[in-house]
View 1 (cartoon, rainbow, N blue to C red):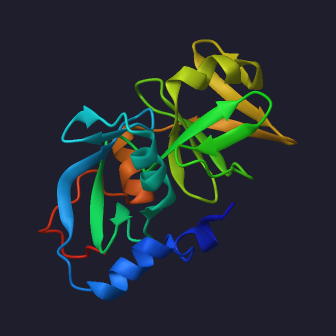
View 2 (view 1 turned 135 degrees about the vertical axis):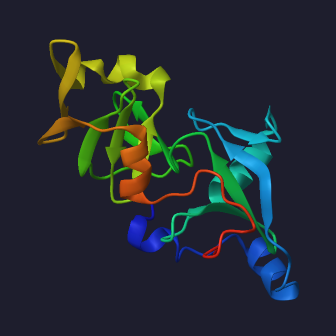
Length: 187
């Protein structure tokens, strides 16, 4: 699976690449596609049930270095409104961590808990929220000191879980939760 250094350079599927060549100047799309805090895709607030559409979004999802998340839909970049972070991490007791787009996580660089008790990790892909449905499976890898999480033991690492506010997370990792066409640095 690609890592942060190669995910943006990974080619889109051949049909997307053909469409980009055929129609290079298609306007960008904003405010249409959303990523929930559980890694679910929504169009105009409605959850997408179609499996092939979900697989297409997963395969063509990118997080650009300037903080924008988008799906390359043929020749058009469809920017993604984020309910929280650009990556949603899932945990499976026997398989470890993966992203909402099925990329395998090979490393954890940092672990944090926000003011709402959400658990976030930073990997080489970037910052992401851990899907709350997976916290039970992850619980045996977490230690607590009083009411707060203290450490995450993963692979051969013991990672201290630090406290951070939502605003600090957004500022530190510089991702755009709600991109608009008026943003000057759009991809």
